[in-house]
Amino acid sequence: MEIAYWHWLSLGVLLFALEIVVPGAILMWFGFGAIVTGIVLWLIPSFTLAAQLIVFVILSIISLLAWRKSPWYKDETTPSDTPGLNNRLQSHIGKVYMLSTPIINGRGSVEVDGSIWQVQGADLPAGTRVKVVSLDGTFFNVTAAE
Image (cartoon, rainbow, N blue to C red; front, top):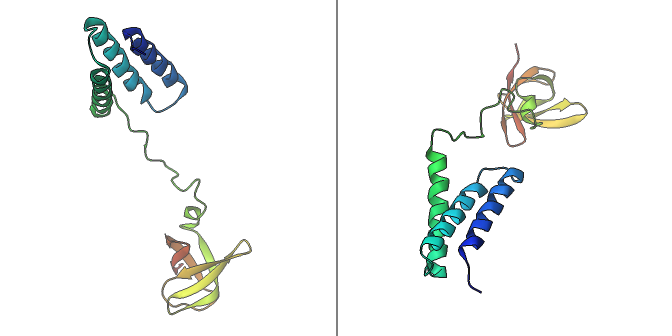
């Protein structure tokens, strides 16, 4: 089967249409590559399939990279004012709990809503109020609360 210029143009239009449905702003750059490849094939009908594919891939990658370097590109990873919103462990940072077992040799535990959590920090007796300052895996790093 021979690929005609309108095949590339159709692919480009399809990729642009899919960009509306699929988020990410990636498909339109491949659509751009397909449309330009179709135009090149229209101007140079003797263009081989291998050359068409090379032009399509190179133009698609160049346009995608140019978009990412352009001043109009916005990184979607904007910082959140509530970074621990969907991370239940992160929600414990800054909270104060009472030691249910003493911290001995750097390890102890607290009970939070019926669950026992392992803590690590300076040795403290049971019943001491401790503040979670950070996480180390599933361990709470704690200090004595004031």
